[in-house]
Length: 370
Image (cartoon, rainbow, N blue to C red; front, side):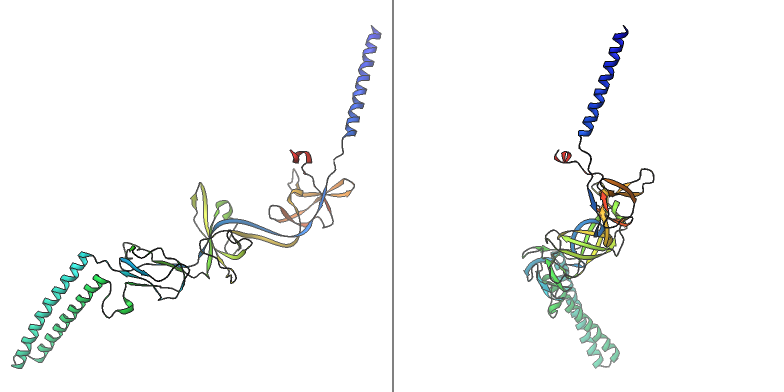
């Protein structure tokens, strides 16, 4: 019995020893972990946020008629440059029958009054010749007759204006001729010959005849999310990229942030505007979609490392990196960070450009293949 127990114990010892030796063999057979290293570089880091929008004129003037009618002739088209006072189009008036009838009645009433005042003037002249009335009474009759004559002429002009949109003697002041009120480029002419147009008045904004703007003064108008609006402020520089103009970047200055946001697709958006600096070599068309990078911070030619190289202390959350001091031997080095662009981060102190930094979270090749 004792011999059996002894044999079992010895067998167990041999098995345990054999297992230990096999484990150590397997452990030694594994490749040791070899950490790669990287070095800091001199780099310009720009911290920015992006807003989407479009390029628009700083001031766009909509030309509207002050009389209703039908477009008879158009003298300009989109892309033309015009000066203030240049003729844009001519309108043929389609008279309103009610207004035309009222104007005709006014003429008849003015004619009746004129004839009455003429008879009164002739009667007063006869009485004055006989010495019955004074010269003052005669002059008063002459004034009343002159007023009646003027009212009759005004009624005729009013009738002509209602019927044709103009009257004799008005020339270029006729409101059937629509003229530019500002100088600039004609962006669009949304009407054609034969289109009916409505006058601009207190109850109707009227039909747009043409849109005119100074294309040398353009702005970026876009929107930023509520999560980003707290990071920006007026007078920050902008970098504008236009999708239709590849490889071109335009400088601008942020000069307006909406004080109130609007909900769009479940998110609050704030409108921003930035004035573009004049570009003599490139023509920017109004309405082009664009992106604006709001420059929140910039550090030129500073020592920088990839953010992936930075580690943080579990307790203090202080940033640090591991620097090599021998073959696969590393020591901890606390660092002070500056601004980041999301990929690279500025290192203000703690390391030098010659230090080799441990790539502690590199992805294994087998994982990359998978």
